[in-house]
Structures are given as C-alpha cells and as structure tokens.
Image (cartoon, rainbow, N blue to C red; front, side):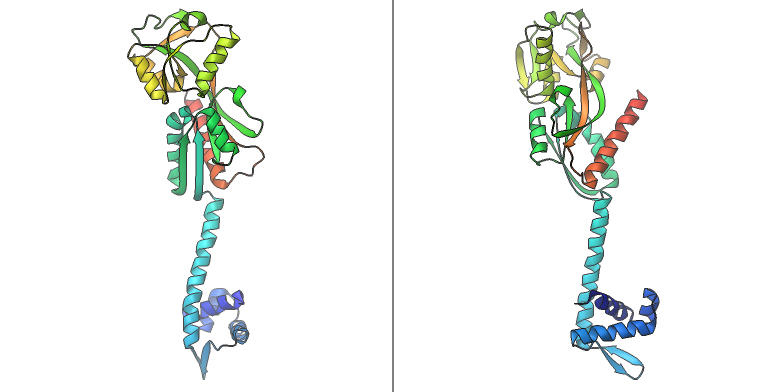
Length: 302
C-alpha cells in the first residue's frame, strides 16, 4: 500500500476537506486531489463520491479512515518511543553492584536519574565483586558498580573511576584498641568480623597481610551483609576492616572508634564498569553521566 497516499487520505478524511488538508500539508489543493485519485486507482476501490463540487466519503473510505487514524497514531507512538530511547526516557537498566555502592551510593544516584527518566526500569542486584563482574561479562547486567582495589580490574572491562575512599579498622569505643595506634601485626591478633569470602574488602585485608608478611586474622564472625557486620562490632567484640563511607558517621557520633594501624593509607576505588568496546545504550550513558556529576559535586563539598 502507498503510505504517502494513505497519509493524504487520512488528512482529508480527518478535516473533511481537500482544501483544508492542503493547507495543513502546505501543498496545493489540486496536488492533493490528484494524488488521492492516484491512490484510489492503486486500491481499485473508490474512497469518495463526487456530487457536483461536493465530496462524500464512501462506506469503505470511512472504515479505511478509522484504521488509518489508528495506524498513524501508532506511528507517532513509535516515533516517540525511538526519541525517548535516544534521550534515555525509556528502556531498562540492570546494575550489578558490590555491597558498598549498592547500599550507600546508588540509591541517591538512581533517584536523581529517575527524576528525569521516570519510565526507565532500573533493577539493582547486590553481588560480591566476582559475581558482579561475572554478570557484566556474561551480559546479565548492563553495568557493574564496584568498590575495591585496582588488582581486580579485568582486561575485558572498561573502568571509569569515580572517586576513592579510605578503608578503616574500627572497633567498639570500649575495645582496648579504640583510638590507639598499633602495628598491623598487633591488630591481626584480634578476632575479625567480616563479610563472606568473595568480598573485595576481605580479599584486600588478606592481601595486606601477605604484602607485610603478617599472619592473617581469624574471621570469628562472618555476615553476608555489611551493616550486620558493623553492628556486631558495635556490641564490643572484634575488629572490622571497612570503608569510611560506611562508618564515618558512627565514628563521628562515638558509636565506633578507629584503630590507627601503622601502614600506608588503604583506599577503595569506586568505579563504574562496562564491557570494553561496547556501544553503550543511551540509558547507560545517562546513568553514568549522573553518577560522575554527583561524584564531582561531592568532591567539591569535601
């Protein structure tokens, strides 16, 4: 079917006049009449009855006009859908995130994103570092949000560093090491409360011990959640090795205390990871932009 002819017919039927349709389309009335006649000829079915200078639409023409109206309305919806997709107004975004960004960073960034992109569906799954990268590489996630060390960076992953935060040793304020400066060997003699194996911070703790040739600590309690581990330390038992983003308010309010260990400052890298060389969908690009702008803003306030 000649879509151009159908479109002209749709306009004529909508306004009930060849002249008005020509004005809307900004072409001459004779051109409209000529192309409608050609469209009727191609169909082999009359669309209008002529009575002198007046035209009336045929029963077939009325039915075709109704279907044409639905067709072109759907066409507008499709055009809008494509435009929305290009501008990140619609689509889906699946983020695999390690515990720190999933719980302390992404909620704020996702809220900022959704404020301007309400119809984008966002799903966030909390994973340890290994599982987050696995989901990304195997196309189960559109992006990964990571907190950890550079040693976990993989060759097939594009790495966008947002900022860094320190990792602290913390204890209950009543603990004998609270606010003390000690050697790495001394603090490693204490029982530790940590997240499960596969946690980036836990792996870095053991790597730190290996680098300094110190016996790793005993993991006395193990939790799948970071908040659970931190609250267990608050009760007075054990040491936690944790991001300052998680515990700085607890330290400030006296619910936790730092243990100052005689080693160089240890830092987490907060990074957005995507598959290397991939042409990113607009929703992913827009989310990354918001994360990076928010990180710059937070750095400026420090």
